[in-house]
Length: 138
Image (tube, rainbow, N blue to C red; front, side, top):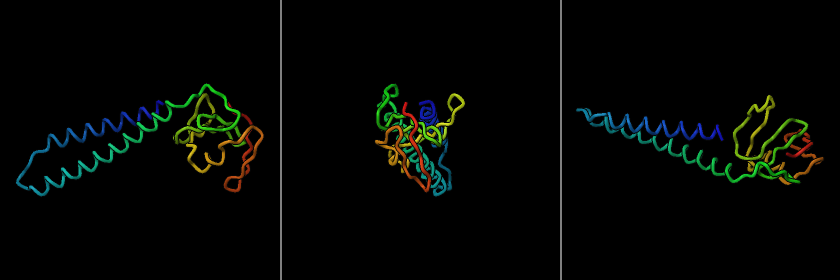
């Protein structure tokens, strides 16, 4: 949640900075240059708005998970210990270090996430010429 909240805050700040810059820019005798600058600022603001919407969607997805539940089969919200380490199926955030352990936070829609879904402790999957064994679910 902290990472996603940081993304949201950064996108909001960037949009505010862009708006402030646009408000401070004055029309000069070089009208085309002014219009080009305003168009570029609007494109950047639109890009930040998309990033903000994506981060808010990720946050909403995280809020819907029940991390205290332990499942018998892997599904979104599962923390999985494998012979390769820990995987947390939620939203794609990449590698994080938590309590001195590396956890790969990945989306259930990712290729590895799809391969892990519905697997149980003791199951093995083949993924990119590797054999991954499910050791525990938390």
